[in-house]
Amino acid sequence: MVRLKGLEKFASKDYPGYLTATVFLGGCNFRCPFCHNSDLVLRPDSLPDLDWDGFLTFLDERKGWLEAVCVSGGEPLLTPELETLLRAIKERGFLVKLDTNGSLPGRLEDVLASGLVDAVAMDVKAAPGKYWPTVRREVDEEDIRRSAALLRGSGIEHYFRTTAVPGLIAEEDLVAIGRWLEGAELFQLQGFSPRNTLDPEFLGVAPYDKESMEKLAEAVRPFFKEVRLEGV
Image: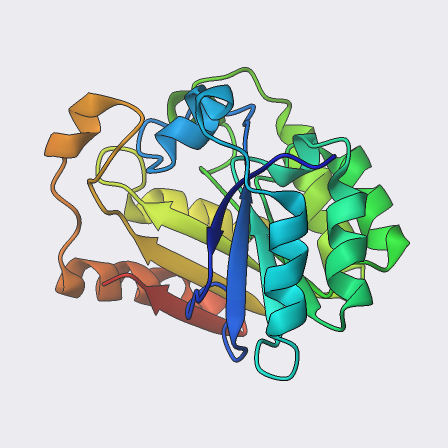
């Protein structure tokens, strides 16, 4: 059975354009210090499991009103039973959006081929060559590149997003990300929120202000067809 760790019954920003709920899966292979889902990443077994039948009832009762379900984490692609969850959502007539960090291209390829996903948001954690200080785990950046290429060639709605954390992401980093993903349809630049961070030291990091975020967005606009600002 799929171990569901949380449910946001109405998540207005998780799948723009659709009335969306978000379900959370536990576990992650990254340790991003600014992550605000620290319990899902570090202590998923300490969190109670959401009742599976209760979740299905929730979906059934919202047919005709809810339009989509976002599957997030943690890193959902680590869950072996992920397709069971996606299929249950799709069978009830909802759109499915998947969040991923892009580190598992093999799993991503399988899920894309399954036809169980309508949209994907891939988090680009850092500029090429700078993943270690940001995710604090060994990562083969070729896997990140492969995942991005899979999405760009999939024909499935997708976008890339980066959280602008002072000290980790500067304008030069965003420009490097832009050059890497140049021509992609949509890039979302997200503001950092210092709450419940995985590394307590990041609770004291002041986010970029609105003016700085707008300047960062302008720096990457030449590389993408659309740049969206979120959380500012």
